[in-house]
Length: 25
Image (cartoon, rainbow, N blue to C red; front, side, top):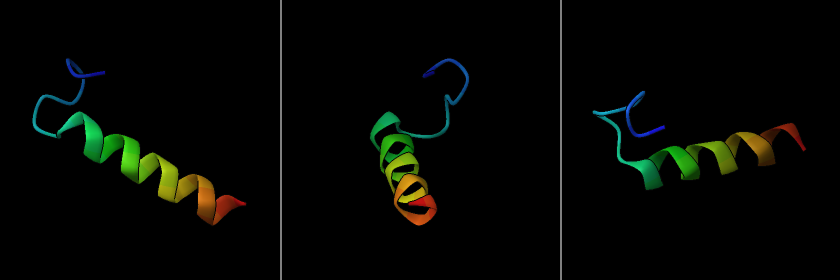
């Protein structure tokens, strides 16, 4: 995960994923 996104902080990815999940629901 961190290796695939070295320029993006991991917490930011998690937050973005949570936002996408809420949008789908």
